[in-house]
Length: 156
Image (tube, rainbow, N blue to C red):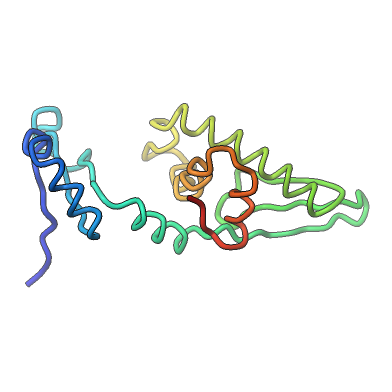
């Protein structure tokens, strides 16, 4: 006994796209395989899944938990995100550090998406950054929405 996710070849998925979207909106995941290009190998299969399902998953597995440090000598704050060690923010106040962190997140997200194949490759140390950066990208540069991620972990 078990659950078998629906798997379709690319041409069938094109033909049934409206039905596939309806299923994804209901919470189902449909897997599409390009049999010609991948010779039946499911390694490069594509999942069609609702955006809300991904949002819920990513907010649970990759929360934007801020880690603060205060430097007594420099009299300033450094803020990082647990699980996302590639970016940080610094400032004389916590507010300045948050703004600097947002600048770093926006810059890194732009770089990440412009080179996504490299960043998500199996050998990349940054391939686990996607759950964070996807939510930053969905904020479309809106700094207030990004700040909400730090508190509510929601961004739409």
